[in-house]
Image (tube, rainbow, N blue to C red; front, side):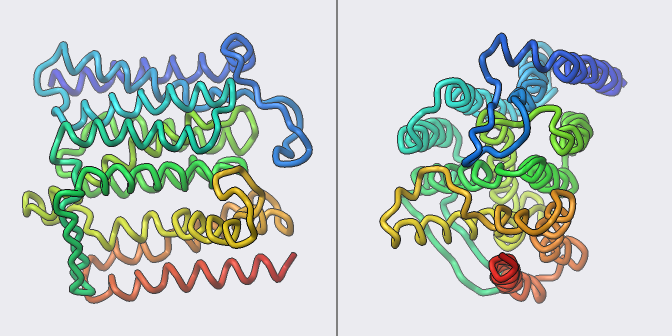
Length: 341
């Protein structure tokens, strides 16, 4: 009964936080110096846009963190570590939104943060990655902490790269968190609250009320990425067999990850800095010929069809096909979008 009352209180507080952040978005962004101004090269949106699209998110999880110290059994130690790491990464992104940190330096900083936090709790260390449908086992041994930090850094970087058109990154992260929620045995009320406002956030970003900015994309993807590793380890240890497997996680991350890898190597081969921002991503190709809404529908439909198939059938017989389907769907959509141009 107490937790239900606390849930209602938290929902109301988040509602207030969200709409204050939305209503006074220009004043807040001017004060924080995080207005995004178009440059007609990489940033093609119309007019200066606030970058406080995830400020409500970090205030909300900070509230949850404070409550976790006040109320026993509110959230567990792992959830607390996820929130702390998310807040640290948000600070890095916030500084980048204001002063534009060198991409190489920024990547090193959040890799270093991930390495430190992952080393504090073995539940976030990927010591063994097992693809049951392929009977493939990858043992990271003494490199587990490094490997986990690398995977998290790669994931948040891939999401940050996807954040090139309105609402795409926020929508992808919201869908991933929906999968996490339905796989989570404890089903924290906090996830329900965050999912509600993240869904609303996609609409507001689509309407260009504000953007996530690097701070938002990095923070929310950190929150999702650490959840994925934690749930995978629970699944692998046999604590809960209904959680996410390696195959499930791969198909959830596939499109942003594959696109990041492709652009990285294409730019490397062409003698360009692979870490600098560009307009060579799949979503950039799609939006050159389609409306924003149609681009979002096409991208999300292709990206999450294999994940939905895994979720519905929950049979390892199908997961190997869905792993291959991710790659095929990405290649097909990439070829189609480039041919359209």
